[in-house]
Image 1 (tube, one colour):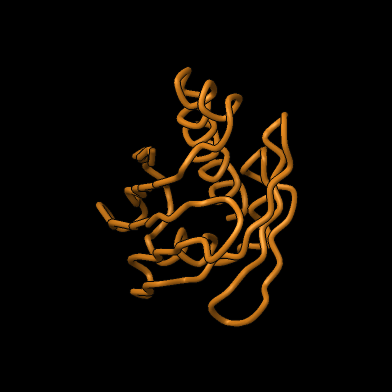
Image 2 (spheres, one colour):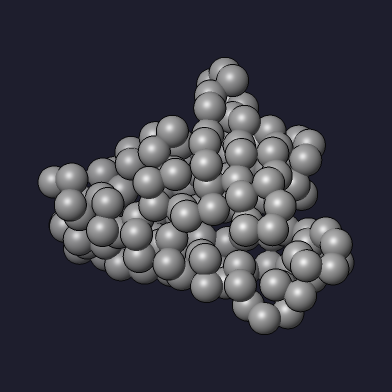
Length: 139
């Protein structure tokens, strides 16, 4: 059964700046703890490796929608089943509301238990906070 998670955070930079940092997928391991590596295959596809503490997973993701400085959406082509979208809403000159929507499908007993206990939700919350710190600290 698929699970959906939504998160949001306000970041003290313009939307274009936050968006630009989000497109630097190779940096994701710096602020998303389970992600070990992200490598670009081409303009639309990336290969991901993550360790969720109990099992390493790999998948290829494809960018499905791009609205520069506003939105990026993706879906996994293989491996760990997931898809999502991130939006950047400029709410002031130097302030952006970033929203994230993630759909994923837990596999196996441990992933389903983790899902039941909100482990992924907490990872998303922590990752958004770390992304905020990363972007704001790079100014």
